[in-house]
Image (tube, rainbow, N blue to C red; front, top):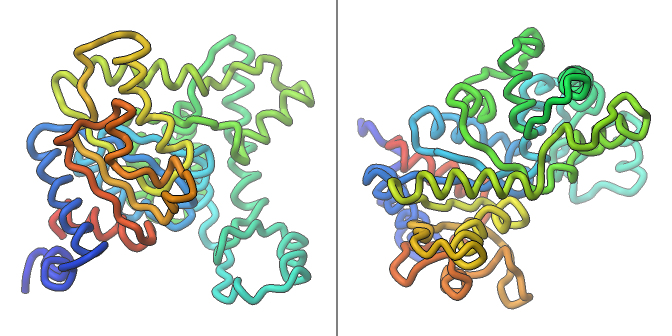
Length: 325
């Protein structure tokens, strides 16, 4: 039997259209990293609730991922799944739910994401209670940290370990904490924890709105990382979904080159996006690699791929290929 059955299957059957692009993108990803390059992965949508961590954590531990940009939702939802997996409710017939059915889910404190409901008490409130202690401690000490740094602190403290309901090997955030992976979380306030944080400030249990660092500071930190490392190790950009998780970090290159006039700034050395965004509607998220050349993000010779498909299907297959599964 082959030692790489998934990779062999892809090469045998994925020969045209989006399928062929998937194989090409995986090959180029592997070549970029094996050639000494680094890779940033951006996570849009609900990838953590889709349990992408099962394959993404393996990628992180294998040294195939060097930074992550994600929404606040993806950051927190990996934690939610880690501690409350058995209380999640799957709704496979979600397309036929009536408004009354939806209200019944709310009454059960189940927050639906497509076919999966996140339990508020077991997941969201458990994490809120744990992480708000860290917020209050930092607030009282006048300390400030990025959202992922609070998440790392929470995981490393062991405070959640007794509540784990999945193998931590399947948590991408646990894997990232193990390697102290750089993470940027643009627009973190657009998340459940961001809402909880605001409520604590309004209530007065937190005093300093800036205890959690985000936004512009995240871009400054990403600029430092990129400027220090890109001249030595070409950075690739692997974008899952669209939105701010992808649009924010890719702009660090033109900012460095054009706004700061650092003329020697290397362009991104690889680009791939999995998306169902429609370019003809004026979508930034669905912009083709060619359009990104005009913005000074990619070069004429940068390997660029667009896979117009479902990221929950495509991303694990690409990761499996990169890992040689």
